[in-house]
Amino acid sequence: MSVSIVASRYAKSLIELAKEQNVLEEVYQDMLLFKDTADKNRGLMLALKSPVVRHEKKLGILKSLFENRVNPVSYAIYTIITKKNREAILDEIAAEFIKSYNLYRGIQRATVITTTPLTAELREQFKGIVASATGSTVDLSEKVDTSLIGGYILRIDDRQVDASLRSRLNELKLQLTN
Image 1 (cartoon, rainbow, N blue to C red):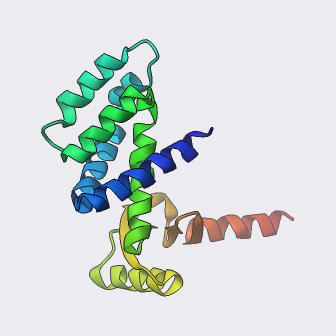
Image 2: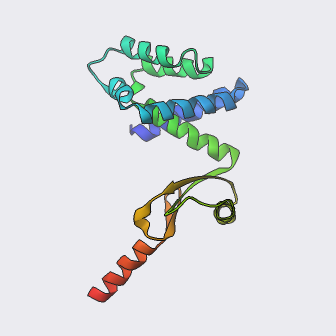
Image 3: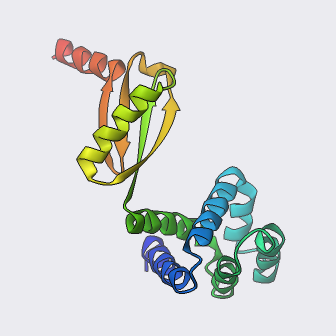
């Protein structure tokens, strides 16, 4: 069974459990914390994915990092997943949980990449564009990439609008070489 299917099943089960226990928001924050920690600490995920490191040691790592920082429901899931030898996909489970939570709450994540930081007015315009296209509340993240020269790239899930000068110049270059 593929990792994404397994991660999705665990994430959906965790959402249902968190809703039953009335701790959905807390578990969401815990999954954000785990994902952020895993993304910033390569060693953590290498240890969790390593077949050499014993499961008890992996559980000890998770316990020392998260037991006192997360909701007991979240920590219980870490324990269950480790006992089932699935700790290597904890980051995928956290990512799937975040996606499922956003879907449940009607939140659409989008990323806009520009050459300079956005003004408040432009930020609202981008949020309006995404909201009208998706019909959802928008969680907009911003990135600055000076290699774009000008314009922007807007990413919504697996869709991308590339209105950057770099891409237009590349298109023009292709047209001139043909």
